[in-house]
Length: 392
Image (tube, rainbow, N blue to C red; front, side, top):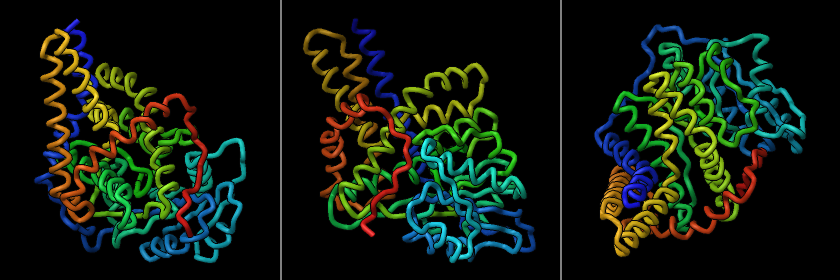
């Protein structure tokens, strides 16, 4: 009984050690702000922008993109099941537009599939996917396109979100997003390992994007695509010198709804796909797929904190009723690893977001969300594409 319990605790808390390893590697990581060599010919690019009722703010995104396009490039906006003037705004901003109307198949993945089919009549060398609410850093398209062309692999830009300055929930969410999209992939890059795709700021050689099944209705289609390509031998690489950014919703209700959809999709992906892909990576001896599977098995920051805390409590109670101390030692080590990773992440990446006195809120915020996590698995996962209300 003690052995079985210790094994269960070890499996549940293993992601905390993975998280800590990634953060430790990120602490010394650096990245150069490099540009393509002068005189080099950048591959022909098509920027694909899926948009669902994004007329407000879309013009800024298209303007950012067009400033970085070369003469042979193009920007295509997919106005997907829109009930506003997204298509009109996109055309007036200078983008190509294709409209899609299918109320039975709603989701970003379907929009991307539609856009790729449209581009197939005159395919580019590199496809770059940018969300309609993102701003793009200077030279980012050049860096993404060149890196993808040289490596013949998918490339992921640094993707960050900013939040309003006041409510603590917003600041914790922004910190967690920075840990997930900066600290952890930067650590993997420092170890010469691949990263997950993040939904926006993604570049693909045309022949690779054709290998993916985007029209699947998955909420976390980016995670799915990255794992599929790693399984095919093309794991994504992180290019932090290219960057895209966006903002969390202004209302607490909309922000929580957005985070809950992401977390629900991630957890269901872990439950449905990870065990099989883990086995497949071992059978194929595919190290990069194994790395991404293990990384994908690390749940969101607050969920991970809840898990290690619950395991510490359970193993402590088990020890009190006479079970071996092995489970307690493992769970205590995992809690320590989690705490070390959170503190180090804050020191290097989060001090501008959370003041020192607010750092403990990461742990309390995780505990407060436990009722939601319990309720999550009793609900059907929604793959519907819901535009986030940003109060505009």
